Image (cartoon, rainbow, N blue to C red; front, side, top):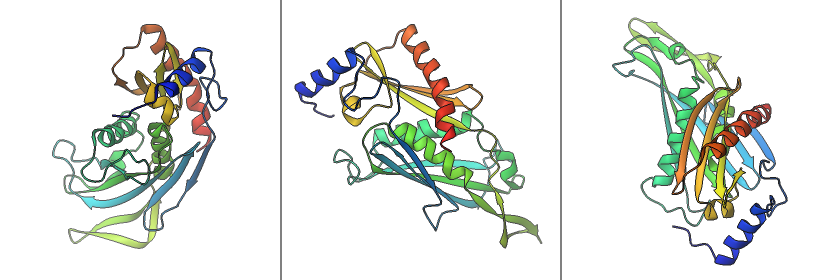
Length: 261
């Protein structure tokens, strides 16, 4: 658990109460965003995203495997997250932490519930061979709001992913050495993260703002304005007005975020 100096807590809370922030942004404004694709030569798809000082890299690694028994005609997605101490002194080496697991699950839920990837087109032979996409999230610098950075990076990486053409020859899967196809993308989405400081909702929190916040809300929205995922963190509740306000801001900001792609 982070220990925040009381003077820092009071300073940030007082600023937010007066609709101000340490970096001069409005309560509903993002930091500068940059996206770069094809940053990992060994991955079939990759992207680096920076939101302010926060930096994440996502790599997509496909592999042929067996489908799940209940979805024999669908490809498989698996999302993992690695938080290294070099990105934040509070990250510890070893098995995935609760924060790491939650980050991967929230990002994964947005991908699935938005039906981002056309999984039926990743089937090579129903019930036997499908493409499995391993989505790896690597945190390089944690300066707050890893959720939105990772979701954007996953979107950018998936859109840049190319798979080798697979065919069945004599009951064996053969991969083409020179023919590829773009990963079939069905949708676009963005994640908007808010924290509650005092009685105000703050978008795209910095690390210090996250540490003094009493609650967190992640809202996943597709490009057509459909809410596809939500996740609450923190100990304090949200009232109806706070939730509706956050959702409205998320819907409007999604268009802005997707434009970066």
